[in-house]
Image (cartoon, rainbow, N blue to C red):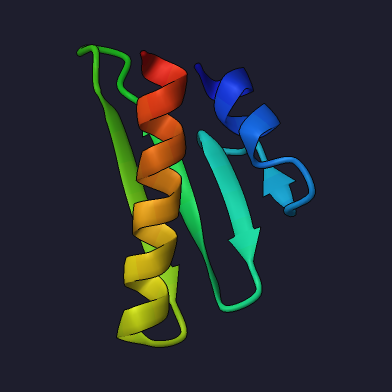
Length: 68
């Protein structure tokens, strides 16, 4: 699934350290699959609360599609 999320985020800065980190102009997100459970943890950071919410929603949409 990490590869599919990375493919869907092509064109954005990415770093595979500690999961998958995706850069945005106004923040970023880190997605990490659990090693003990079939879950993914997503952490979003933004320059503003609005940016954080948008980044979170964008990344979660990609994760949902990649995990389907």
